[in-house]
Every structure is written in structure tokens, then in C-alpha cells.
Length: 295
Image (cartoon, rainbow, N blue to C red; front, top):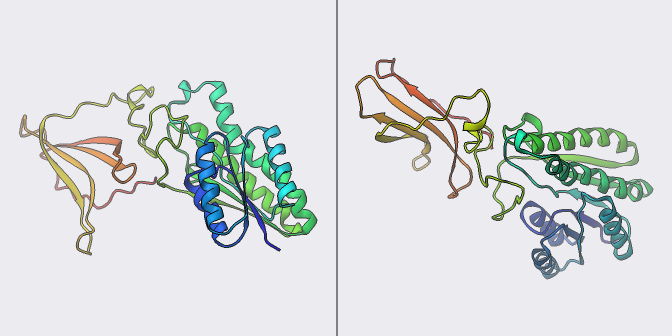
């Protein structure tokens, strides 16, 4: 008998890729999204082209009533779930002081409450079979936090804690619960409609918010002068890495180097501002060893 998997938030991105991989391996696949019905139908066609039975349901898993309707349809078509992948989620980049209560509640509902909803509805069938798998898609920001993504970081931290608690609670029933803390990934354009700034710098300071964070110095305009790339030399030819830009001020001999550190947001999609450092010309010889940037 074929096993059944539900992947929430699976009309595109990580969720779609996971769903199609399960379809490729012969599972009954249930896909879901809150809004993108056109993309959902396209993903359904792709799953069916791989030979899988696929049920596509539009439902906002952050809303309890939508989840109840979703699981009723799953029960009608396939019976109890064998695998649940909680992938649905949104992001919001900006200062905490700019986020209103409704935006906070929407993000927490989409990223954290949705995991509770789906687990609560999936677990009874898994307990009955004494078997099941739950995979929660989290983020490194749930572990270390990210400035200008306080709500997102909090929601993913909650997912991590819920995962650990459920793993202990459900282990006696033969149910495994795990989380994947994703780092930087590439997704479809417009993935996060809640982002007011688009692809801002992640991990360090949000470049577009930097000037408005209380207590932080104003981000200065660098002086004019000659720009020189800072390259991290690799031992393998052709693998050198651009770490940022050094701008040599043409104004005076004492002005030295003005270094602006940039981090790639995504291949070909721009950079995010991490900070600027001014190095006096008379300082000791500087050797840039590495720049670690978590994304």
C-alpha cells in the first residue's frame, strides 16, 4: 500500500521540490498553498506526470478551520497520513518598531501555529498505526537570530523548540519528529510578500534599515576614489572569491582605505550592506584572511 505525504506550502520553492521528490518515489502526495492556485495546479500536473496520485488543496494552514478542511479531504482521498512536512511560512524584513500587531500575528500563524495545527490533526492517525514521520522546515535564524527579522527568527525558534518537545513526546508511539534549519536558498521571485524591503542584507545589519536603528551611527557615504576588489585567494585556480570593495580615498595621503563589506544575497541578484571600516594609511600592514557570512 502506498504511503501518503502532505507537504504544506508546496506550490513553489522548497515545498514544491520536496513534494516532487516524494512523487518521484511513488508516494501519494498532498500539496497545498494559501493563495497561488495557478502554481499549485502546475505542481499537481508535474507530480502526476511522475506517476503519483496527487491531491491539491488551497488552504491557509495558519488558520485552524482551513486545516480541518484540508485534513478532511486527505482522509477522504487517502486515509491517514504517513508523513507530514511542515514547510509553509512567510517572512517580513524590517525594524521591529515598524511591524504592527496584525503583521506579527499573521507571521506567527503562518510559521508556527501552522505547525501546531497540522501536527495536532496528523498525530492521531500516526499514533493509531504506531508509525509516522514529521519534518518541520525551520531556519538558521531560529538558532542565532537575525536583525531586521525578529518575528521570523522568533517563529523559527519556536518551530525548533516544538520539534524537540514533540520528538520526545511521540517517540514511544514510533513517530519520528525532526527539523531542518535551512540556510540561504534560492526561491521564486516575490517569495515573501510580507517583505517591505525585498532582498535586504540578512544576518548582519539590514542595509536599508541601518540608518534608522537607534544608537547606530549614520551610514556614511564613502569618499570618492579608486575602487579595488578584495579577493580571497583560493588554492584551486578559478575559485577566488570577492569579499568586498576597498576604496582608496584620493583626497589625502592620511585618509587610507575605506572598506565596504558586502555579502551576496543570491547569485546575480545584488548584495546586502554589512558595514564599513576606515583604515588609516599609516596603520600596520593589513592582511584580510577571511570573511565569514552566514546566510
